[in-house]
Length: 148
Image (tube, rainbow, N blue to C red; front, side, top):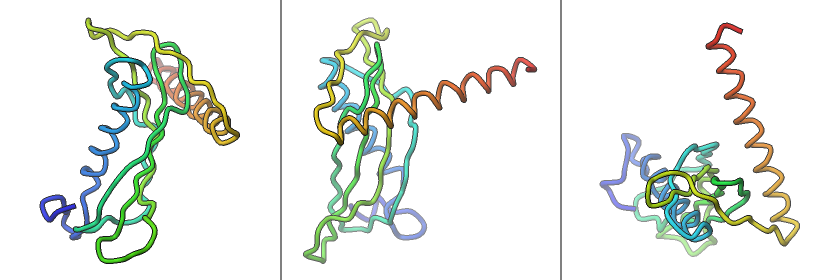
């Protein structure tokens, strides 16, 4: 991270990290789905600790859950402190809902995700909970707007 990435506090601006998260989620979604995917929803973004100028930031992402045309990608952001020889610090976590798109820009079907490990199964279950909450929240807001 360089000085042009900083905010008024002198640490890396959260928007820079969000950009990285969105980029990597898009790559992972495209690789899984076999073509382009766009961000439909950011379910959660947790900033855990500040990122500093000089830190080497990297991210790891994986598909946690797949629907018909959408998929949830979990992203874990790490920072290696430039001036320390210690393990990378976990600085942020995010969950994004991506939608696979065809050449016409419309949603297209995606292959299923097949959880293999206990951790994969846990991530799948937790992604389903986030999906259920999104749908429930959307229904409640729609009902509120309709005066119910």
